[in-house]
Length: 413
Image 1 (tube, rainbow, N blue to C red):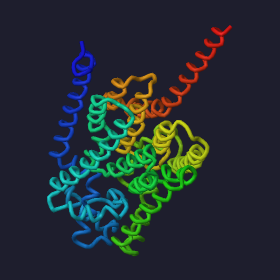
Image 2 (image 1 turned 90 degrees about the vertical axis):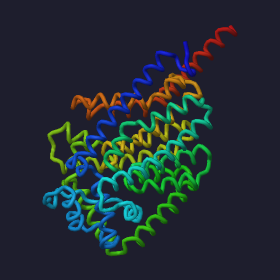
Image 3 (image 1 turned 45 degrees about the vertical axis):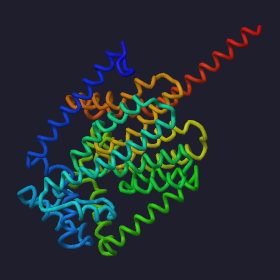
Image 4 (image 1 turned 30 degrees about the horizontal axis):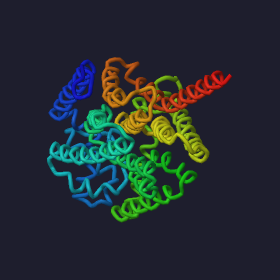
């Protein structure tokens, strides 16, 4: 029996999965926001300090680590050593927004900031849903995929930590939409938003120089505009402080960097090999450079399998970027949506099964947190599956085509 187009057993499993995620998230959030140590230990505290410094001392002083320390100490309630300060190292163009949102009340500021991020996530998921609609995905599957998108575990971790991953996700979604709709300047403008994570932006944008110059020009225009805004916001002295903070965080030794907990190659090597951290960081940066070269070659030579190239590029960015934490895995929604899109064209996964993929991935990641081995490795398996699926699908099509041709030749004999 089917209800609302979904087999009753699958419907029950989906509802149970959604309810499990909602209950888990509600419990985690209530515990975090009501515990001073938990809420001030979230990444949001450095966004809060940036906004408050901009209000009191001006935007040019936001990257002053001593002032950041003063604000953070007010919230945690004890004295921090310099290395314990969570440094604000994000691009200056978001400072006016932080300056508007933050008030003396830390908790209300946290809620207001997250509300803005949820709106941005809604825009990004809406764009991804429109891509599915244009590809012929049915309404019920689009609705389920949107629910799964909002309930995606890394997205929730982003909200819980008060991070700004929504900007990166929105920019990437606009890029994908622009590529599929052949609105190449729009695609490049979307990529400009990803400069809030410059290392990610480089992996996504540089290949466009060799694939489609309009996309790259759009990126240069939007990134350049944001750079001018940034310089106007903080001034030249502020730019110098910003560069100093970047060097501090690139060293990987300050509080909040937590390279052992990263979800990228550096994190994997840190956890797996008894090698000095400095050597691992060098290897990580070298691989990052090689990945950029590799994806540039991929986009310059390949003209088919656009879904596969986009998904693979996003996953390689997640794996190779030197600074990548759990909330950044929100970008995995891009290859997941592309997999759902490909289900409309036939393949190993039907639309109904593909639509609930993000829910299944979230449940897998949530359960994996119960054991350290799975906690730090499950996402690598998911990334490998998402990267390989389009190419397995293509191989399956070639196999079926070859089998059909052999059968036709045998019949003609």
